[in-house]
Length: 483
View 1 (cartoon, helix red, strand yellow):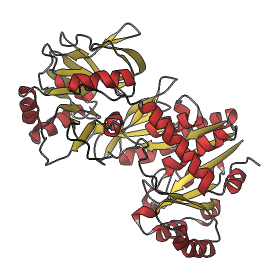
View 2: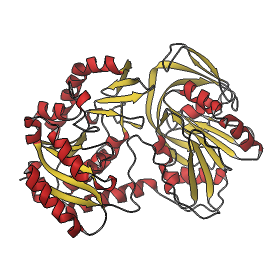
View 3: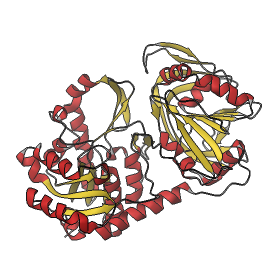
View 4: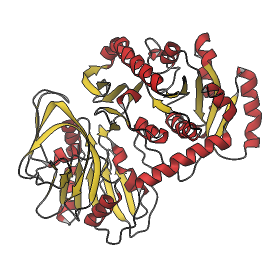
């Protein structure tokens, strides 16, 4: 039984990607492998097989390892609901909201949960592949650290340090990070991986030789920049846009301050017949065929911001001209008449007027709804699968069952004119038949079939190929305890 940890010199250095790649590479070797991230701060989450909630990156890593997601893969999840605080989720269940300083004092308790989960995984799998968080060299966060070197020291595991050369300054990142670690932490770093390299590797060779001589640690490999590659983002919205044919369906998503599970829109961005546009603060909603209101961690506050931006007026104009509107989770709640938060779960207690486009009201309740679900869409009776993560309970005649679920419940609603659709289901576009039905509803007549799950699997395989082609797999096997 072994544990190997991947830490990064910065956020978005490639930790999630490398752990995903290593999970599939180890699986190819016939090794029972499991992903792990002690503490994750993200608004993109997934529902696990045991009915809890973890970061989506770990759910993708679980797929790479051939496993169903489990709460032990991410025992501590922080979901920011303000600039100073977050909802704290331990072993898949929300225990409450904490300000940053309060959580800092709570870390010893969180560390107990982390070590319990790690011990359970270590007892059942030959290899635990651990993803760090941010950078291990954040001086202000070193005391009581549970996400990087604090965890590595506690379980006595080796560490690979990865840096992104595409951002520039890769040698400074690696050497500087190493210099800011304690002697025992420096000794844990067993090698470097350089990520997203473009060009002739011969031009990089002098730098690699210098790095090894300067630090006394090997470069385990240099991973190339992969074109047309997609892996779900852990948190930041991926706003890359490809210019599609002018006949493409125009889809617009307003980016709200506490947007959650924006990975819902990855299938849209990747579809060759869809031009997806994210609209941020200060931007005007352009002409569109479909506007999608996303999930939100702070629905009332985000609804207020939507109005401040004038986007409610743009949405009303869009509907007058025959456009379609889809609300997902928090976006669904915004479509109703009112949103009530009597317990102050997402801010100050009170109520907010919704957009009034569907006849129902929502009350936020302490018990979070967490479910993986299957069912059929009202349009074309297309099969749909997805997951629910919400604290709102919505009731009213406008919820006429846009989705009929296999467990006997109904979900969401469709307006009488067929223009406004709302649902609590995340992952709505991942089932090919539902995806095609929704695109036809939005105005695309001849829909090219796209299987998002197959695209994700293809890119996981590509990642594992890169490990075999560009990393020193013999050294990797030794670090993983694979002989």
